[in-house]
Image (cartoon, rainbow, N blue to C red; front, side, top):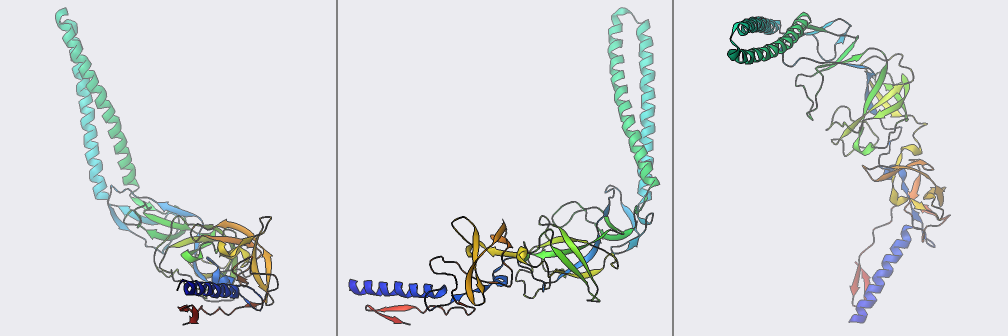
Length: 397
């Protein structure tokens, strides 16, 4: 019985070995190779399009005094404004009441100070005429009154500041735009969805345009700072501009599916996951308007190895430590040296800077099986059938 089990086990191992040999070149076998674009994590090709919008590089933020109610807002998001145009005004009735109250308190403090001064003067006169046995008591009263006077003077200075500020706010109850531009947002809540403080009104200044778009979770690393981008008009595909990615904001992602989802040749299964803003500086913004919606794509001349993010399991190293991959070349397997970039902490993939493009086909490396010149195939090997031990005689079921 044990002999049969040993025979069955040996045959099972032999079957597994044969299947392994079929995966990468052996005599009479072909090597299965896969497309880099399908294997690449974070790959972006010229076929992928990202909706974008023309925004201003310069943004002006208008703050508000949250202690004062706003009576009326004269603009809304999307409105174009000019320097000096009224944006909103505070409730002047409330401002006037606050100012009247502060002025009354100021007069009371001034009267209190005058009263302290008179009392101090009277006490000094009384002490001068009092017998020596009573002068110490007068001195203590004078010192106490001088302390009260000093405190009242400090309160008076603080109240004078409050009155001056209130008068200034009342004079400027109507808040105007300091620049020409477009109202990007009006924030009534004071904070964003993460509880971070926001300005009351944000204005994108006219001129000095750039493009803002978003990058999906699976495309992290597919676009890098310095990547050349093509900007395409939504209304006329023949009208294009060129630009360069200047920054990618991984610190402030947006959540959920939105109209900003990129349009790709393949569907993004994580379209509801985090999306990261990136910005493109234009070579020449002529013909673009603030707020205009456009499409972006990676420049076909730039969509090369820099866009590939490949699992490190496909990368092998020679004795000198140089990295290489097994690549299909005219139906045959060949070893190709590649230049590695940084590891992507989000996906665990490594950037291939040189030596590989998204259109290449590569094999999973096995230095004992893969060899130069081995025939390649794009047809995935059939799944191994399960061997069955039938009393030491192997059957396939």
